[in-house]
Image 1 (cartoon, each protein chain N blue to C red):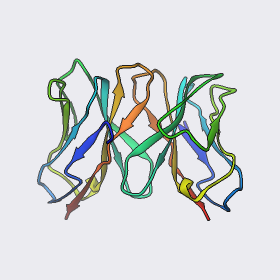
Image 2 (tube, chains in turn purple, orange):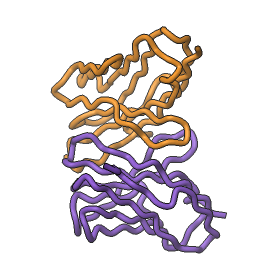
Image 3 (cartoon, rainbow over the protein chains, first blue to last red):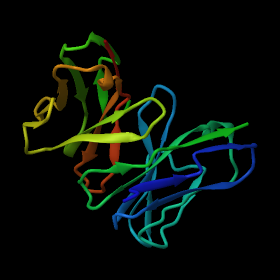
Length: 112
Length: 112
């Protein structure tokens, strides 16, 4: 059972480039979310989804897009990367709202 | 400021001692969760305590919740060097959206 899988683990982007962080879970979880973690801080919610075809914004959604075409996948897109988006990104999933959330291992993104 | 605020920000103890971390929050919650994060890794779920519960145990971990004071504490008994990590509380708000709001974390160092 792989759990929550994120790719890539490390990425360096130039300002203005676009990229997609991939997230997949094999637990048939309905709820998926993306967080970013900056040095010395907790996680801040970017976007989340309560099921296929449904997405919504979190605390810090600007500069990011998401889609949820399948239950398994929840990609996070950066349309035009900025240095302020340098961070560690975590994808997470849960079977039900209000239950334990399982996290991926993180994706380290640097925008130069 | 963030929904969850943790105290202390850093804690250093000797192996065998107990470690207590506190979390305060501002609004009504559905549940409160504690996570551990080892350096450079993802978050690992420790305990979930619901708003109608006052105390939960899991091995050497004890979590209390006082909804009247909007606070929770995590106690790690008989600490080990392997407990060295950052610990985060996260609140699941009563809006039932499943969005977790994280505190900034407590960095625990357990010296052998």
